[in-house]
Length: 270
Image (cartoon, rainbow, N blue to C red; front, side, top):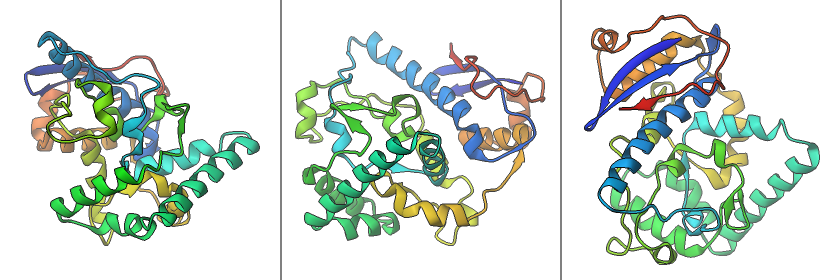
């Protein structure tokens, strides 16, 4: 278990992380990292409400689920492994939805461009493509009845997307019509960069809609394993951009691990 205190924006995050025992992959730490990110987002939501603004996102409002969703390789592998735990008929249904989404992108001339988007480093070009992708109107394959069917394990980027502008504005988003909740740190991008040195392309994100196209490659690339506490400390250091020495000052708990990655214990914002 690790107790730690981090300063994020004007908030102090006090947390207890219960980690799985022994050597793990970052994929295995995602349940803990999701709770960590949720605490940071929760603090940002509290600040937003204190300003008199209300979050307009809710179940049944799935306009944002037509946007391209960038995910890290760690999140992609976690989703693929989760699908494998489902009954065969559910796996078949999910795969068919992804195939239909790819076919819809192909019909709109967007499939190859979506594949190539992961290699684009130009911010303006990426933004332009993202808008074109949204206007293509292809929903996320996990969208069911305009609600996220994987909400508890949804990607970090989805967790970070919250608006206070009227929900109907999301159908035709512009810089003027959408008011975002300001999140003090971009958790999703940290995941994009984590272990990037192992990849010839460096930092890399994957489009969620093409999840199963990446299946074979993700299985071929061996995932780095490390002691759970050491790996979590490494992620925290990347999160706060701190040296190991500075990180030691933030950690106040016992550096031991417990087999409770899905524990209800999580970060608390103060």
